[in-house]
Image 1: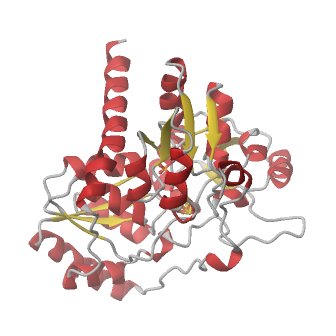
Image 2: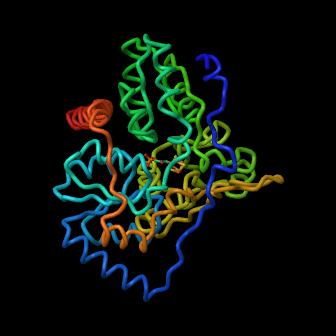
Length: 355
Ligand code: 13P
Ligand code: SF4
């Protein structure tokens, strides 16, 4: 395959490759029993939960109650790295478990369901990506966190939604040409924001890709005072209407800090749990994922994030199943791209503090 054909082909998943979003249903007595069991096993095994905002409320609550952490992908990685626990239970998707293992190779990393993947990761096969990079040796390779360990190992930098614009701005200021993968919408957004010279891989998040620009316009007309908060994995027609484009943490902070009462939110609806906790008096409206004869597939809830559940979490703690392993050679190479981002964000925080 030529590199031109790679840039011209879509790496979005086909409908048949997307599992249905199935949320585990349990009653109050089972929930109480599982919570008790999991709390005791976490203590016994010196284990800590690290959960993403898109996972089920039961998991987020338990993580908070047991000294674990609920956050975006960047902060999950940082927390896991800095934690003293011997075992990290990563409630999220595969790339988050792998990132935890790469940063903490001596820790045992378990995940409730090893099938929990991500359409961006699946849409960026390491061999094709590596061949593409080889064909452009004069480009710096920047990959989004939502990629396999092997893709990160081929990259110079890993970035997250909360850091992409700052990193690319920094590289563009040094006159670097950039290969960006895998999210085309985030790549286009970053390119527009920074004016950087970028070759953009054509992958997409199946959840954010479903947000609809036209239907959002209609919704805004009914809620003229609502602020629109958008995750940058969304299409340009949605991003263009945003009052704020930001990572998941940025969206939560904005609801808390902005004076507005009403918010239209274009990201996975799992985030509403944390926002309601942090800002109970605000009105939250889901951005539309369907309309005008279009129906949605994920309907704003990631099928892979939904695979994490209390029952599965209890099972992995009991059995030790679902441990994440990453080839030592890949760990070595991928660590460089991740560490570069952690150091960069640390320096930025320091600069902001000094200013
Ligand atoms: P954040 O880094 O903003 O948490 O995003 C991760 C993700 O998978 C979004 O779909
Ligand atoms: Fe991947 Fe999208 Fe799910 Fe995030 S929401 S894990 S980008 S498929």
